Image (tube, rainbow, N blue to C red):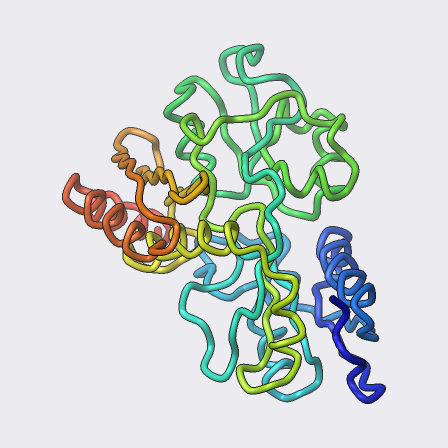
Amino acid sequence: MPVAPLAKRVLTVGSRGSQLALWQAQFVASQLNARGVQTRIEIIRTTGDHLQAASLARTGGKGLFTKEIEEALLRGDIDIAVHSLKDLPTEITEGLTIAAVPEREDPRDAILGHPLHELVDGSRIGTSSGRRAAQLRILRTDLDIQPIRGNVDTRLRKLKEGQYDAIVLAAAALLRLGLADEMSGLFSPEEMCPAPGQGALAIQTRANDSARDICAALNHEPTHQAVRCERTVLAALGGGCQLPVGAFADPQEDILRAIAVVVSPDGSRHVRAESAGPRQHPEELGQALAAELIRRGAEKILDQSKSSAKS
């Protein structure tokens, strides 16, 4: 049901300025508008936006695309922040909360350009993600995997200019931007385990603000439970969104079926764990998956990854 008008208060939605980020902010704003809430969108540049040529892994990764937006939220400059959930650190900033997680878009990774099986030895494949690069090296040891930065349009342009034979992006980004036809293939979670929270949005508010209760109407509980499981795995392994960690939980009726993987940067070593548990206890399932990964040697692989990022 529509919420009562907020005494003519207009809620300011904070967002990055990329085409994808604005789509996400406008989607949330439209959902609130449909419930009788007036909104406006405020664009905020983040550290990650200023570092278009830098390696995300080497810059630390934590909060690169969220820090300045969270600061604006705490100051009261904005009332709502809309993030790609996979960019949001697992440790929530004091005074803030995730008020809602809408229903998730396709969480899988997509390949654009030539399909993976058609790439010849030495083909150049672009990705900005250490997680994707490491898992690609498991699937194909003969590829020349190169970094690529920029927004979706920039990466597509570089692909079409012939700088790469293929690139890998989140399917959710392409679907939201109406670019599904650009995909030449999709990786199953077993082939390339997605980043924790991939395909999901986080609607963040101040913990004590009335906007929290208003945004709660946009929450999709099965999605929220799934990403809580995935983010628990990441938090238990160190919390950095640039770690080569994949975690995906699939809500099925009353249970979550989850898979998680940790891969060395060169793809030479990896550990994997799978499990299932009640949807009502996602954090317990995430902790169990992380414990199993650690038992199988995940910590040594993560130490290797952190050393590689610093060198």
